[in-house]
Image (cartoon, rainbow, N blue to C red; front, side, top):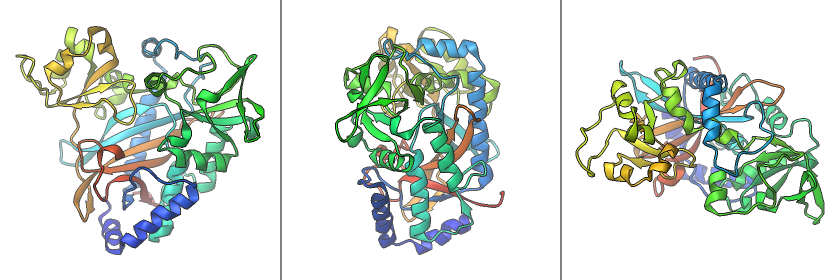
Length: 425
């Protein structure tokens, strides 16, 4: 989006450099990269990223200050997944933004979603430096936010993940982590932080403590657990854990599981009608409210164009149907029909929202035409610190959705990194 930097990069691009980027990343991560990497980083004004970062933090703080909202969100946590020992705030937060055309024709960010869950903190830092090294990007291009440099970033990540604990008693847990697409992130994390990688299904309970088995097969007590397992995957795979999630355990959570539900798509209807989300959160309502309450009137009052109700074939072209607690874009329906809405059982409609569809503006010039970008701001929030935006992640696409799974068999799309001129802009 900074035209001079874009033109310079495109002129110097070669397929050989892109191949070198992939090889460098796989060497540094110690695993194949099984998702698509974009051929290019993106170049954006620092003020744009900082504006998104401020907006995400403001909305999150508003959610945490609203006891009524938190109580409602807590009631939406599925039975069996209301984990004891909830921390006073999330340790991790991501805020995803689209760029749309504003009323004056200028680019404006719009919230896609907030999620209090870890993202690719380790991999993203390595990806940015790999772009810089492979393509010879200027040292004057920054990628870390909040005045952090690379050393400060890793220090804050360690402080958030490991805390005051001995790394020998800290684990990163996930569902079958060695077969997840995010394995490269896990491997960089455990290497840089000196912690263990374990399958959450292998954790053992002894007394009031949780344990894992080390490489020698010895049982090791877990003092702190960096949680990367999400409830909907545990539910979908019908994984029976060896310990009761709802029972109090003598373990610290880095990324307490409850926050995955408390700051999530569940917050979008609330934020769309709250001052903290004014002008940046597209109108949204819960499906049950749309079908049985005032949700339709709420959307129409926000100038969302809706067709008159007629029959089961009525299509809502300006709406997205989203399940609240899915990951990586699973279950999203563009322009749902009344038949699709009616097919969701009445007792399940509170688990879905209808949101005004955003039309991403293509902003990245590539050899395959103008391409869209979605920006994710990554935040860290250690117990003894403040909510801090630390890094951004970019995803490029030309499909309906921005996730890498939705842009298969394309070039110059996929996971990317954002750079900005180091001076304020």
